[in-house]
Amino acid sequence: MADGTTLRGITWNHSRGFTPLAATAQRFGELNAGVEITWEKRSLQAFADQPIDSLAETYDLLVLDHPWAGFAARVRAILPLDELLHSGFLGDQEANSVGASYASYRQDGRQWALAIDAAAPVASYRPDLVEKHRLHLPETWEELLELARAGWVTLPGIPIDTLMNFYMLCSTLGEDVCRTRERVVSPEIGGRALGMLRELTGLLDPEIFSRNPIQIYEAMTEGDDSAYCPFAYGYSNYSRRGYSRRPLVFDGLVTLDGRPCRSTLGGTGLAISARCANPDVAARYAEFVASAQTQRSLYADAGGQPGHRGAWLDDYVNRNTADFFRNTLPVLERAFLRPRYHGYMHFQDNAGAPIREYLMRGGEDRVLLRKLDQLYRESLGDSPQ
Image (cartoon, rainbow, N blue to C red; front, side, top):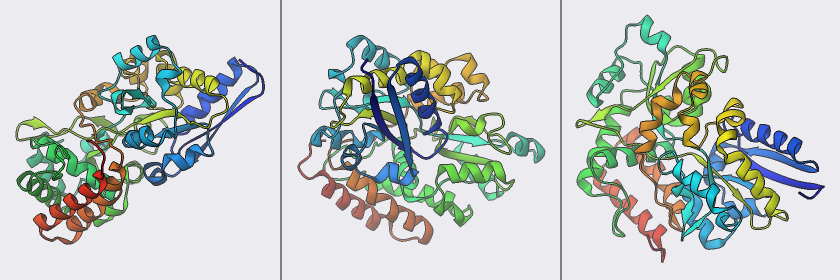
């Protein structure tokens, strides 16, 4: 490996997103003399919104959200990893994918990122508050509403999370979104999903509409007002000893019409900029980060939420996280995979706000669904689904 190689990476600003990459970069540099990898961070909102082509102008390594895959395939701002990594390694990654995490970064027959992190909305609760107040953890949607009426429920309600919850309910009710070019979802299923979300959020503190999952977990662990969150993208950090004032336990989702809710896949992928001057070094580092050994040891120990299934089943990793990974793995295994066509981000960036507005202030669900359909058709353009 050539001496004097310096790589810059950009990730997102949370212990789950930054510290495992800083740790792996440090160790990779120790193992490879002359290689220095530095990581910078951006906000969670910027992570979801900022186009990757602009980031690829500056950085060699990018941590990205899988709905960018279609855009990446079209503009070629990042390198296809199947040209840089051997097939045996990629085969192991695919075989050990957490749900559709590996496939989520595949577009147009190419692999654009490695799934180094896996997540989906899962349930969480404060075990000390549940015991102290003798609360019944809900198993069904109806029981969730009962607990919400008692004042113990919270959830993230900013636009992107509101949209993901809408996807979840539509899928659970039997209709995945964006499956035709004409509409997001049928008026019957969409209307029922909106009504259910409005009923639930109407029972909660309006402050939820300004909070993302991180802010919800901070509020749950630092205060004592909320004991249960029915669905928010999981963060194993909050189940770890000493990370926050009070730890959370994470678990599966409530049932709806006798079926477990089917949440929307998240997680992050590690990609290499097309402008990277040392793609071979970058590829070796990516392989190091995503490897089974690193994922279940250094990466997880540094606060990461691995993307390799072996880490999710590892006894050591689960002991350190109150069984976060074993408890929530079934949720991720059945999670809905968002669309990834070129243009999809226009829809995702704009569809959550009107749903959030409807939940906060009411309105006609069919008018809202027509607006979503219009945004969806705009986003499609000439893109194949």
